[in-house]
Length: 154
Image (cartoon, rainbow, N blue to C red):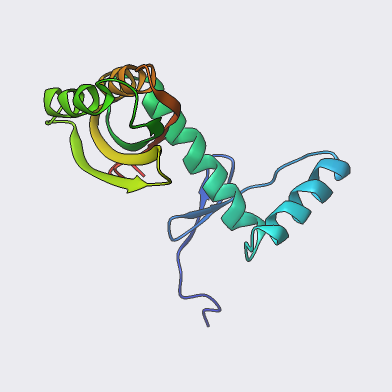
């Protein structure tokens, strides 16, 4: 009589159950307590889900460091639209990089300040260069590049 209908096999570093590998992690109790508090605060159902997300994040960050991997991200920046020629400069940059900029959203924050969020796609090296160019433009008060993945390799 079979108790489990799923295949169980040995895997380097743990037990594999239909593509899922169980493995042990050793850490200080204080660190584990802090981790448990954080995953509860972030509404994770269990440690496994939180650890999987941490591993995925680590993989994505390292893909960006490769510079030649197809990636996706957002460039968010706040600027004063009254600074001389800033609108023209930002628009020119967007046209210059039209192959990498998928979409841009523009919002008026007040009488002077605007925020734009660009969705960008391309090689990591290209995306970082575009973000640096935009964020360093005179009149841009703050900007941030948020890098993620196309999900293809996860």
